[in-house]
Length: 295
Image 1 (cartoon, rainbow, N blue to C red):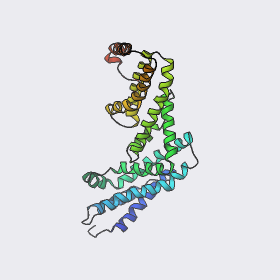
Image 2: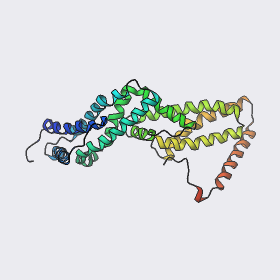
Image 3: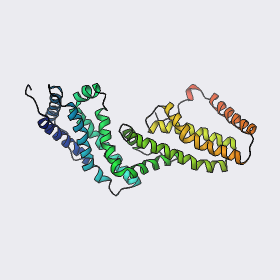
Image 4: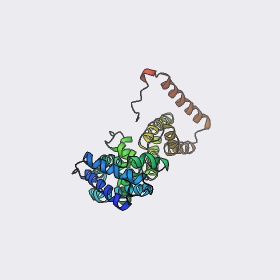
């Protein structure tokens, strides 16, 4: 243990452990034995604490090697698949990948607890998420976005929540792909309610239309907080941009076109507000559990 361990020598051992665990992606792996596991951990620990340590090299090697595994073993499973079949395969591979990562990150426990924390780097789990979704979106970005956005739209239209969608979205939100998917969801939400606004303004009275606006705000605040893995307060702010804005733009345009006066609009707002307050006052603490909550 007193002899210096070169990066090349040590990484060769650790890479063997990662490759062994990567077979989990194909459901053909046996887990490392206790003896093997301790050997990988001891190797990683030694490389991290010796005088000339290789913490950054191990961190980067971890990220790169996992990305290589995804390219070699995940991407081929997604070729020629679209929509439901693409998403089903993506959920399956992400699930297997998460099992693999839990195994592999154990080898680098000291690195994650000390070096990564000290240097304020993304955790190994977050780095692993980037290795997975960074590759998926680099090669199948359009397919992934289309499949995810289609499922979210279907849920808005009343379909049952799709199994695995939350896991995929929360995985994306731990990766560097987060901003890309975040913007895609908001843009699609805006487009969806722009389309719905034209239908609703033609079929509902103004008070009923405003009630639909309120209902949509409540539903989407929960939905965005749930899928984008953000606080509900942040979900409200996003909904003002992606839901309230297109709906109220259509409402105001309709009012101008029909030359509806300000006093009538004010009374419409007041009636809707009173109705909402009346509904809220009828609630009791015992009946406040939100059946639509995503928590």
